[in-house]
Every structure is written in structure tokens, then in C-alpha cells.
Length: 189
Image (cartoon, rainbow, N blue to C red; front, side, top):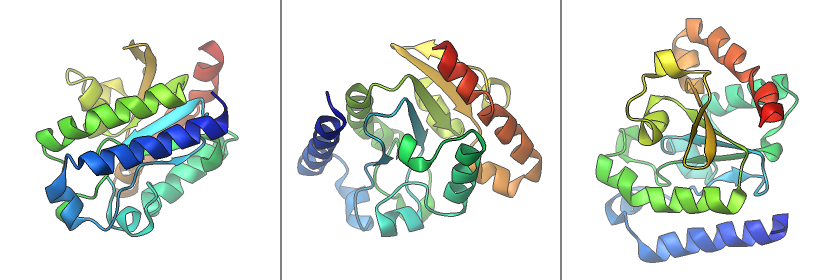
């Protein structure tokens, strides 16, 4: 599939998800669906947990302070947001930025997996423990971060969430160091 065909397919997936309306309660409290942003033909997909207030407002994931830090780290390895695809497991903002409920995550997974099937990334990077635990419930982020895992036909790289590094300065360098592994890992894949 060409980049344009992939984008059209991603747009169709978003329309289908909204038409099926599997999360009416979340949808009614959010401004809009936040399906994802970036290159539909990317080698790397970043997956967060759910949109926050700024993301809900703009319809784009990772546009707040954590998004700025993510952009800085991408720049540090020679990439831009336009080079990667960024999304969340849950595509609507939960009220008051609460954690998504297990049934909301479950209702969102087929959409996320369909996005991955269209994009066909070489590397899937989970941002934070919530995102990681959807795929790897047995892992603990403090031990698993920066260590690639192969499962379900994908190579995953669990990383701390950029917001965690904003709240805990000690994690900032850890996240930057883990990010530095990405080019080498991509080359090996």
C-alpha cells in the first residue's frame, strides 16, 4: 500500500470506529476522537494510554508538555513527529484524565490493532506502564523499559511515559538513554 492508501485506510478505520460507537460514555464526555497523528507509513509507532485535555481540544495525541519532550527526544535521534506515528490505546479522553477502565481498553483494542496492521511498523514503542501492560501484563515498567520484546509479529520497546520524566527528574535521563537505543534497534530489525 502507498502512503496515501494507508492514510485513507486509517481514515476509514476512524470513521468505522465512530460509527460503531463502542464507547458512548467516553465519547459523550470528550470533544472529539483522537485517532493518531503522523506518518501512516512509519517504521515506528508510539502508543500512549489516552488523550488528555490538550489532545482532546486539538484532536492530536501528545501535544502538551509530554508531547514537547517526546518531540525533543525524537529530535535527539534525528527524527521528527512527521517521521513516526503517534497514537493511544483509548482514542477518547477519559473524564478528568482518569485511567481508562479495562472495558474501555478492551473496546479500543481492535481499532488499535487494525491501525498497526495498516501501518506495518518495524517497531512499536509503548509509552508508560499502562500502554505496556495492555500488551505485556506480566511486565513491570521499571524493569522492562528499554528492553525490546517480540510478540504477535511485532517488536515492542517499552519506555517510560514522557510525562513521568516531567514529574520525576531522575527519569528524564533514563528516558533519553532508552530513546538513544531506537536507531540501533531499528537497524537490527
